[in-house]
Image (cartoon, rainbow, N blue to C red; front, side):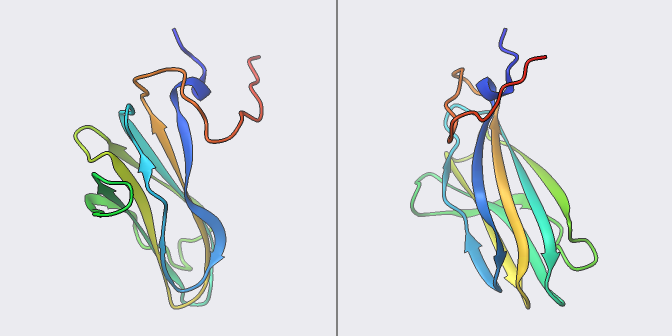
Length: 139
C-alpha cells in the first residue's frame, strides 16, 4: 500500500507568487490525465489600497486553446478585509476536460497572491514531481 504523499499527489504552480499589478493573470495549462481530483490553493498576501483579487478555474480539451470556465470553481473575492490568508477549492476531475488552468483577476491596485494546484488520486503511482523532492521525513 502506498502511503507516501509524494507518490500519489503532484504539485503544480497555478499562478506564480508575486505582487501582481491590476489585470488578468493567466496560469499555464496543467495536464490532469490519470488524476482523480485537484485541490486549488490560493495564498492571498496583502492587497493594495482598495485592491481586489478574483480567482477561478478554467478547463479545455487542448493544452493551448479553448479554455472555458468550470461552473462553480470560483473563489470568494479577496479584498483588504479578507486578505493575508489561504483559500482552498476542490475539483473532481472525472468527467472534466483534460487540462485545467487558474485565472486571477487583480483589480484597482497591485496585490500579493499565488495559486498552487495539487493533483491527487493518481491512477499510476508513483507520480513524477515537477521538481526533485526536497525532503522525505518518515519518522
